[in-house]
Image (cartoon, rainbow, N blue to C red):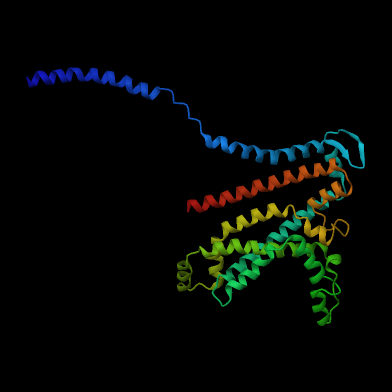
Length: 324
């Protein structure tokens, strides 16, 4: 009986396997079910559409005006001109100096803010009395409005008659300097850097506080001095934070306007005219909306190119940190 039962089971098992295989194949090859309706996506749709309209509509209007003749002083002379506005912009005597001034302003402010922010972060990472109050004083300039900061520097610090620098130079027996007239670009760089050093300081101090103190102690036991600890331990640790500072500051420094408008108004001549101020002067002083729109498109393209390379640099640094 047992042998008969075993033979029956053995004889039926292939049939059971053959019948079970098609069922499993049917399950594998069966088409996926349609995804159910998600009400969350419907609720997100208005905000996404508003955000797209908020970005696309002004950009589309700027592109439209950049290829049309539109001057507020001659509203009857309109029409499609193609790339003529871009050609006039490139031939403007102030265009290439504005590009150079923009690059000089960004590069100088980045160098000053990164170096100054790094040194301040290392200094304020050390324990001392009143460190909390000192940190608040260092962070303070970042919360001052650009126009207010420019007025403070113009009328209270750099003024050649009653400014603080003139007062100090007279007491030292030196002739006061009219900074905004003799060194306009340097003055603008100092004002803008004074506002952005606290930002770099905040980011770098936060990154520095995440550094393990055991590494410093081990380096000190091995005989490393403060300078070697800074260059071989602290600075590599701050590499990613410095990249973030450079990326964020560069994007905002491309649109510096209030400091220039309040202090020098782009002068003397075009000494402090950057791309943003050039677009303003063409659009709101010369009333040529077409050429100003072409300048705006050029500024958008330039900002996107710079952002592309900065994001790639940041991604490369993040990739290197994750691989380690």
